[in-house]
Image (cartoon, rainbow over all chains, first blue to last red):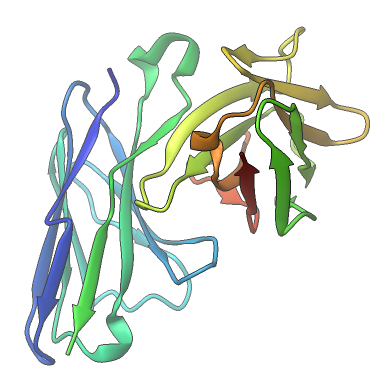
Length: 120
Length: 114
């Protein structure tokens, strides 16, 4: 249980285009999802917290208009990188919190496999 | 504010030996949760173990155990009988009372030698 999928796993795009990344909780409902960015050999940097049916809460320094987050259902959140530039190239990881129904691990966040974005 | 410190950027261990990965934390919250994640080269973050601040016993999950010393604010991960597949980055994280987000440490790269 507690599986989170992410699609696509890898994407290469041209500068100026937009890229959408999907994050799904496959076997549980996630009221809260998180989007992280990770640079090589560094820790995860939280970009935003996404609650189903409401606007995402962005961390300081993250551009809301550039990184659009939509959490339309309890199992799906999307991150759209708009007008991507080479400096947006990174590893993006989503996670979902198990929530109240999770029993012993109800506070645990489960992560997707990540999406490697390369902007040419 | 919460802070996680992992002081070992890299560790090298012989296969089948036990290994301890250090994690210290700082928080003023009376209640919090501590987590360890493994990140192999594929990039996926794999949940290993969870310890609640009010749990009476140290958490264990198979070969993983958490040496929780509340007074010292440490939550070290112990891996028994290490295997080659344990080679990965390991992140310690915590979430404070009422908070939604995790705070991560900088990670420790563990290499298991045959």
